[in-house]
Length: 66
Length: 213
Image 1: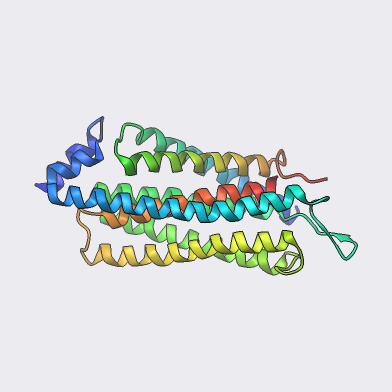
Image 2: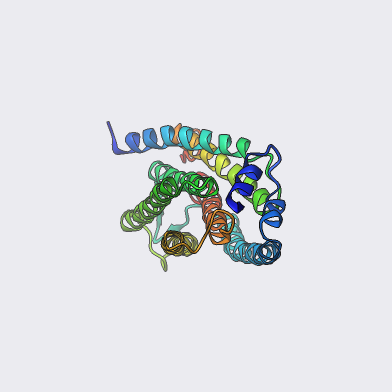
């Protein structure tokens, strides 16, 4: 098992865990109103998007350079 | 009484943050709004700072005949995507733990707040160690190419923000345990959480630009 495979495995599992948690938190906070609540929702959403990018990188769908 | 008012407001289906503070202390609610706008302006100014460097990188990259650039007859290597993906998850994970920390403070659970805050600080330090490792193994230099200059400038600037964030969260933790914040007055913790989420989101852009694009 190569070092890169271990790193991608950790990234894959971590991306699912963190991404799902971020989405659940976003759902829980959805009803909250106010400037800080709205910005937090935006930032949580972008963080969940980052988890999708990391997941795709772990699966070698993104970030594969010939 | 104030704590009870907060608890009721938080568990209400429509959690109006501003109304929650008005109910507890109208003067605090007003100063909190002003401080919040000030903090948002700071985050916007920071966003502009990163945007300037990011657009410079995009310009340099799209105007280069080949990417990675060729230096001394050799094409520079791509960055290690596998390690970066793992390190990114460490930082994104710290965003989630910071969110949990603030939620526990709102629900007056100080013990869990401390645990999640420490987890956030540890993950933040873990990310910085990961960056230091990457700097030590990456086969480019700051001065050797536009790729190296862009990479070290942007990730260095971000790393500095993470370092400041770790110090900031440590100070917030000390303040929280010394009774500076209460169940209804905790703007510092809100600002710290927003800052940490902001640092996470900046990394989403850098991760895409340097490792996935």
